[in-house]
Image 1 (cartoon, helix red, strand yellow):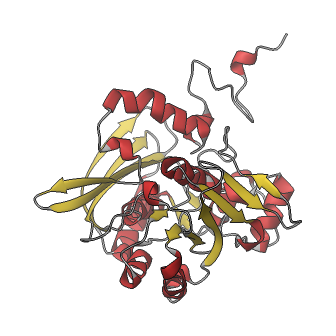
Image 2 (cartoon, rainbow, N blue to C red; image 1 turned 90 degrees about the vertical axis):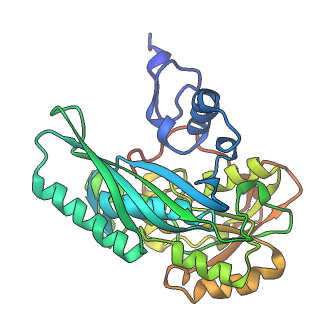
Length: 349
């Protein structure tokens, strides 16, 4: 007889006694791990916000603070590597609270036997990404683990930045009537990593969208400081981000499926692999919930910025079905867009 206790794919059992890949997927299992293990252990008012970064009052200012770990496999992929991913990811987490990143820390965990040339290549990529984002890598640490007990290189970055006065961006501020905007085509990062990991070819190279979003957010705030929510749809993709916002704000979200910009190569790859582009990770995109009266001006400012040239309105925030995301399909029907349970694409960031 099969032993159900060891099942982990595609939808792992949610009451199992061990960690499975789905706990790192940004979906339902990740949320349960945070709410049932970590939050009770650390519980405090600041942590309870569960945003991309924490907002800390310090010396009369508000400091945004964030940390993230990167275990992407392979280390190098079309459009980037673990190094620039580690910089951009933390810079973007800070940007999602309206802060412009100022300083980063960086910790490397290296596996014994990893070529120093590879480590140097990653470090230089981090340096270049930091310069492009206008941030300083100010401190760091290095540890080495035995051969066979790592996967070459793992990186953790933390960052700080100041939140401008009058800015209050957090998932709890989503309101019925808000317009939902995405800054550009989705699904590129996840498919780019998967293609090189599995040796797949789709007739055209698909490159990751990894990029810093601080400048784009600054342009949006230049239109209005009353942006309600910003979120970068990394693990779990657009679907996970929208579900998290809906749950945090107690509102519903209606997504227009046809309006979501999915590049044709990504759509083809997802169709071939049986993936939904809404759940595929991105590393250079943001989702914004914008008050309707500011939506046109914010969208124009986004499209005028290189990182927002493909911005599009993809839905709206509604009072109906609180905590739930639904999509209007191309055929005129609707479907529920739920949090993923398992892990579609592990080790993606």
